[in-house]
Amino acid sequence: MKKRLLLASLLICATTSVFADDSFQWHGYYRAGLGMADDLSNINKNSNEVHSLGRYGLEYDDFVAASLSKRWTDAKGQWSQYNFSYNVFDYSEDGTNAVNTYGTKVNTLDSTDNYVEMGGLTFLPKDSSMWVGKRRIASGINLLDEDYKKFNGRGIGYSSKNFDINFFKELEAGDMGEYGDIFTLDGTLKFKNANIEGTFTKLTEDFSIPYVDSGEKGDTSLSVLAEYKSSNFLGFTKGNTTYRAQFGKGVTADKLNMAVITDEKDIAYRFTADSSIMIKNWIVNTVVNYESSKDDSANITYSTLSVVGRGTKKLTDNISMIYEAALTNKSNVDFEGTPSGNADGTAYKLVAGPAVQLDTMPWVRPIIRTTVTLIGGDKEVTNLDDTSELRLGAQFETYF
Image (cartoon, rainbow, N blue to C red):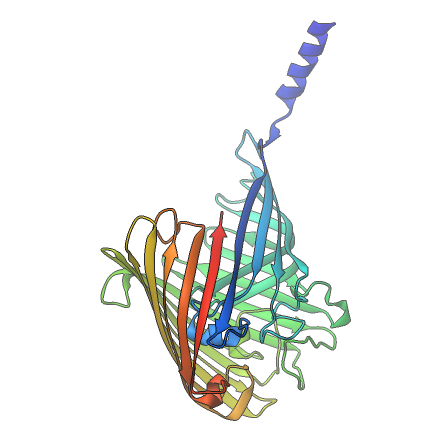
């Protein structure tokens, strides 16, 4: 009897070519902290400040993002992977509203990924894969904590060595039935050191969502993104710089290459140079970002030029000092993000503070930071009561 059971088990194993990995993969990103003005009053994160002057010393929020995946493979090298992830926010864009730019209510669980991806399939080209489900695809400017492209919704997509193509329905605010249906087609051509990407969005019903400016909406938008990665620091010495140029019609600059439609006559563009370099005990990161929008509903053209530089100096194996300086010039738009013909001027930020890690390398987490920040400039832009404000902050950040 035992021999027959053993033989049956061996036959089952021999005919079963697909097997699951022994464990799930769990990844996450977490941060929390506090910010205070010099009178000890609480300072909420204002993303319009962060997008213009950089996140360091201004990011006083709690944020949780986690993902869970399970992978199956077979003897031929074919694989299938299930992916699930979620975010939890505790802030809105101005620190007061109940809805943030994701359309998600504060302190609610937002599922951003719930999809299956398959690759190595015999009928597909080498190094290609396909996915179906609900997925978030996003890329951002790290120093400014600003996405330059972002899609989330139910859809289907294909990725290969030379091109990607993705189709989405809805937005990442969850079920868009109450707002209307919106469809997005995004395609990317890949080259050795460059990408060219196009995003087309189509509206099929009346559409409005809390974080899109009021006014007459169009029914289509089109954005184009060109990206080039260079192995030098702003063309001067060995390092890394990524150059991006974006243009869009039917969207404003902050919504380029996203599944969003503002006004069909809106025109926007953005130019970015995002760089890094290591010099002895220093790590230097810089970003130069210029964006401009012609907002047809407001009958105004507004723009922002931001220059941010961060230097991290290793002091010991556990302690480093981080310095950041930022300057932004705004035309017809303030830190509330509202186009205004009276909001012209310049703002600045100076911040410094120690950081503690197990090893003072840029990728090592967890990290604890304490900061002293001076922010100021023209009141028409900053919306501060005075020409400057001193802020104190502390934050931890980790990912795995």
